[in-house]
Image 1: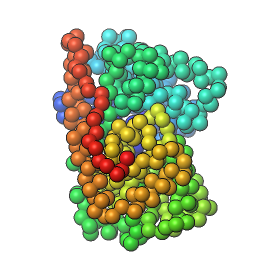
Image 2: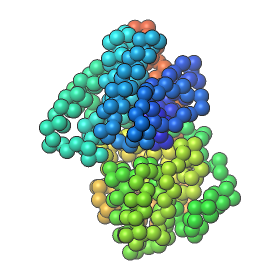
Image 3: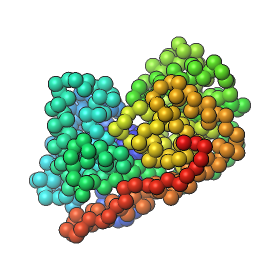
Length: 404
């Protein structure tokens, strides 16, 4: 799909926007569902009358949509031969591999997590299922088919090399990035923020904890609500602003059943262009994602907005936050409660200094302009046959005591 205001869609949008500035002509081939973005050329495959909703995660509906997308891609690609095929997700990687063989265009695979890992995380496929072995085999073939693989984190790069035996020579870590000019708290006045808070019914005398993302168990939403039931036993100086979809009604009912109705506000879907304005309301951010194989680009949005961020101590969180994260050392309600208590207990000055550090880290290491130049260099090397550029896969964080 494209565009759906979360996750991989944001990476695609920012990559395309950046590459267009560098002079590339880009056409996105996508499912029929999703919304159009001004300035982005999208060609959509044929659809079916009973499914035009946005699909989050693994779904059986994607099987027939992938067949339709593959047919359209091959027909269109043979008529208008591309110079480069840049495929996202494993479905795109498989279709792109076929088109690459037919046209001779190099294939760049944008890898954002394990296919089978996502299926397990989304409870679409149990790890002990006989189908798991087939999909693992298919995932392995797709991983090896591309000329170059870009990964959304160094952790993903290591996963490819260690678990799927992909040659390190074809893996280029290109971590998710953020536009720090757009995601900047200083773009919004105190009066604007008070007005938006009033429209949402947020308390003015409490610290606002913000969450922005998909509302699903693998994102840690269930665990976060369970953690709040523990936190409310000892303090009442916070309010959670829960932004995202799907399952809004489900989680509203869950919060009410847990006695959290007065501590959580649900906004539903937030358009990507509105995300900075809503994040500007936060004093603290939380990213309780429990998936070990996927990226977590929302953390970079939090960092750019100068928000002290609580996350589980996963490799992806560490790569982005470095020593500036407030980490829960294990995936549990107790650990998350302890981390939230730590950041809530920080003085306003300490929170501001930590937020400043995180924003500077984003500007220094995770800027889309720099990432676009790296992608362009890879494109040009593939087209010219020259040696591929050297990409440093690791970010060395500065020390910041007291927060790791």
